[in-house]
Length: 381
Image 1 (tube, rainbow, N blue to C red):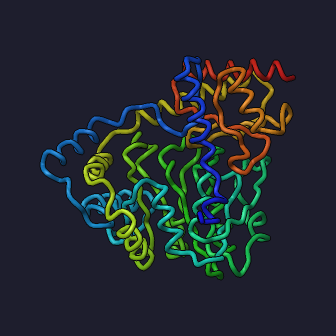
Image 2: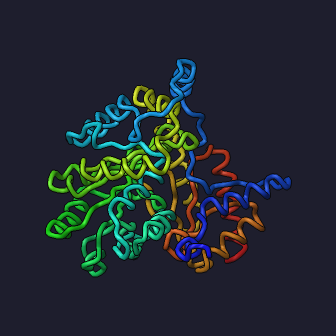
């Protein structure tokens, strides 16, 4: 009989709707996809060339399960440079994307029945991975009026003796919110006397356009309680390369490495050498282009009566469509059916009455897509 836990898990709504849009494209329809959180840029040539060079040199064998030592050292240097931390290669495990880094972490931390706090709206894979790791996701609804930035008062009622971890994500998917420093001090004061870990998803850390990125590891007292999840996917347009990593206290990192060794040995070896070159790539161009698109989308939104979360980071716009249709799944499906525009319903992230669009697309595509959204809004008023 198939696992009851696996049967209870829903497929990724992001990938599911994107796949439906691709099917319509193949059938000859002019579809605009503002669904997947994937940069439209080609991976920088320096990264591609370094991976190719590694293959030519015969670097195609197994590596240390935690990853190539040189790459782990560079990751530690990268993390330390912005956080004033003192991580070493021993704190790092390189995994198959940020998803495996997160799953390895949950497997290392959770016993059956342990609870993990998920702050909604939240990335679609958090709940599924917690369940797969035999944990229990506890959803905390955040407030739109606060731009979905968590406060201790929001979280505290949901804590229990079974709480093992809190997952935070800043810059945030799907909202684009960037959590300020005081948020992390509030969370620190909330858990400082409790045996609770903080899992900090920092995949979009370089994509901050207003304010500053802040990591809980910048609070020295939180470092032994915090596991960072990060990846090369978004910043360096390496989604298909599947290179992510965890940064954890050494005793946890050792357990994560143990899990990794049994699941996949190591990740793709040439991809690791490609990632090694990423730190020497100038990414200012990519960040500037994302910011240009962000500004375009916000200016364009002035043409319609729709509220949204002001996006300080990442590359998403989270739009409140509840005044037109509180059933965001119906809204998204009708939008795809009638206007050939693909977006993600907010309920997939735990926020009913919203949709998420990705502005990791050209301005021409964004204008075309938003015009179709506005046309649909005019028709359903």
